[in-house]
Image 1 (cartoon, rainbow, N blue to C red):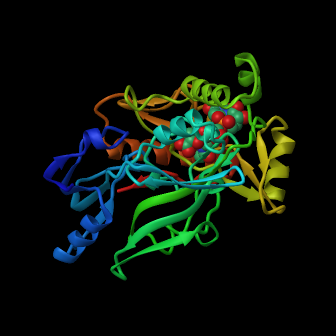
Image 2: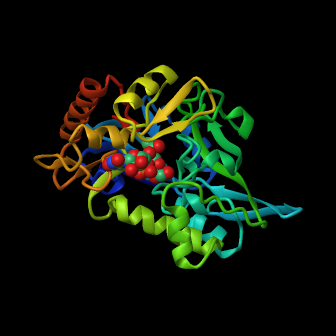
Length: 336
Ligand code: EPU
């Protein structure tokens, strides 16, 4: 079913809760509806607005926002304990994780409680606690607007990297993702190696699927602000990846600095949250915006902030980190 809104206030449709308007917003359910829309009307300007969890509006949107609302979770088949599942782009990601855990299927539990919809997961290859969407995604199906046809890409073709995919690069602005296909496992595969996860899982009584989900939810709730209460878009910045030499130089000055190996042995990932924290900005507040007091990677709207105020704070944070450590941190959130 199509729902078509004109001059719509986006405050309840972006997790930063900033007040901006869109000329038009269309919710669609099926691929047929989506294709018919593009064939019937020429959209001069359009973009996908999914859960609105990774976007900061700094001005009104004078075009058409397309919102997928398809909800299905369909079992496609099972072979040797590997279970294939098709998921509509509009399904809340965490509902999918909860469904998998209820059905005894492994693979999504470390990605519990990430806000957003299933169709957005491949775009930035969402990740947390040692897992990434690319570990479970097998295929992504989308409408290619330029070619006016449905297409799909297998996981190897999606260009997945740390918070990266082809959907942010070559296919940016030309496709609308309609569903993802994932593969889960009946066989237990606990991933507890990251941060406090193991300790929390032990406290709950051991590495069952349910305990891991519960542990991840508890850790996230303790550090990350609930978007229903405090406007935010999760990590505002990406963790920077620097050369081995740069990391070594920093480690001689800050031996306690968290750092992580990457797939490329010449590169090291640093923790932007630690850099911002160490720069003295954790909990820093400027009017209605601030750096979250429990996780410095997150910028928050204390109420009534504009996108411009958030951006001004982000620029200040970037400049301060650059000044103190010589490291550039890029934004993870999309800015309009
Ligand atoms: N740290 C600080 N101070 C802070 C924040 C972090 O010292 O204010 C230190 C921590 O103590 C730790 C290190 O920095 O040693 C890394 O922190 P954390 O484990 O909290 O993870 P992160 O690197 O800050 C990333 C993801 C999160 C994800 C967590 C857990 C990015 C940009 N962010 O954060 O994802 O939940 O790992 O895996 O990669 C998101 O993308 O929106 C998001 C929340």
